[in-house]
Length: 309
Image (cartoon, rainbow, N blue to C red; front, side):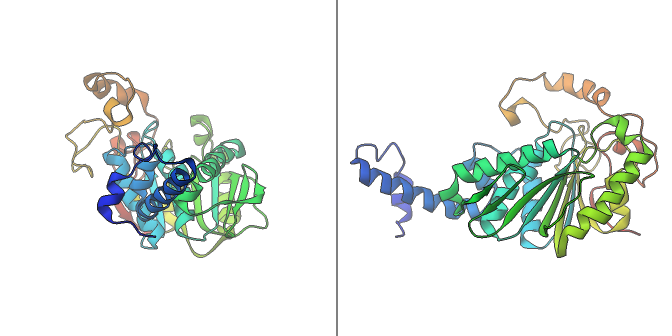
């Protein structure tokens, strides 16, 4: 049953509290189903439904993630500073929303199986909590944090970088934070192992025309992102902690990416962040990619698209 728009706006849990319990339950269920239509259309609305208010850099990320969902962007690389909530939006909110829109299997990886399963657990719990809104539900016999399925058949698989991935094919491959530490990033042996795993284990588990999303902090120009960008064409979101010239968000020069208003939590004043943020970012990065060393230091790569040429 579809309700007129003006009536839907007037209805809320508080406004129906006076109704008999059974009728109130039916009305609240109907309201949740109606809200689900808008949240399944818009990743921003889904984020708000979960209690998040996307900041400017989140809205840019959301726009690109929606292009991945539509098939417009086959490979998306995201480089933002630590603490910018890129994982919350790309590794938690997006997979749950995508599963509500599609029947695609998702393969998600992080530098350890423990971290990968942490994201998987959060997504699983979101789906369980908002099942009516999303229009999907977990399969009763497959709900482990590292691998679970929906009643409709789609599956989610969480894997640590370097581990084997057997018996699973995915329509979306997502890698979030493939390097554990600066020490690992500086090790050529570990970088070679990560690359070998990416080519021979991760990518072979993706079906033809599968989408890929890579999210990471750049510690080294020869990291997984650096090699992947030289291997295939990617759409790249690169937002330095402090704005540079021609900032994609239109920030003023040296303006921080976020402040306390964006997250609703206390932090130091903007003027202090402006001077202290550069000291918090990796500094030992050679100028090998076709960008300035300052861009590399401040979460570098490139803005826009890049190809193997």
